Image (cartoon, rainbow, N blue to C red):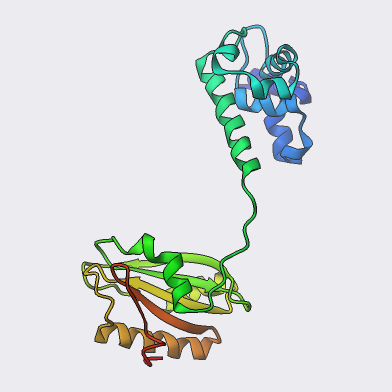
Length: 229
């Protein structure tokens, strides 16, 4: 046991990229160290860091590694199928991240906006799902959470759960949404009672319930537009 601990301490710092990443973050590591973390292990004669350095040299740097196929990687000493696939998976994730753009959060100005945002997610569900959209002061959606999944025709949401989630996100207001598996979005007496209860609690806490939208099969009803709020 003591001999093993001594051996770990004697490993040079540059041969411990995971520890360095934990201490300094990924941005503080070299390409070789990052690749070594992906490889996880080296070979009998090479550490993971040494293997990573050789791999980058044989590929002509990080650009060449990006262009290398799985078969080309597998031809390199010390790189089997598993390691080649790990490298390819990491590179593909990088490509996908580079293709994405930061999109502005959706803005909710009407029940139609709510419907466009959630209709396709909720209209085919066979159980009632109660979903909350959390908004900032400019009505941008800053969070979304399914607070309850009920039976075929009912779902139960306690105000405590809803406002705990809203406070956690520092939401200025909340939009409530749930689906009717029957496809008919006509509000039930229970829907109206729940809406009133949540609205009253919101007035006390200082977080407004802007609307409660019921989703049917390509149809929706706004309880606010219907005069229930």
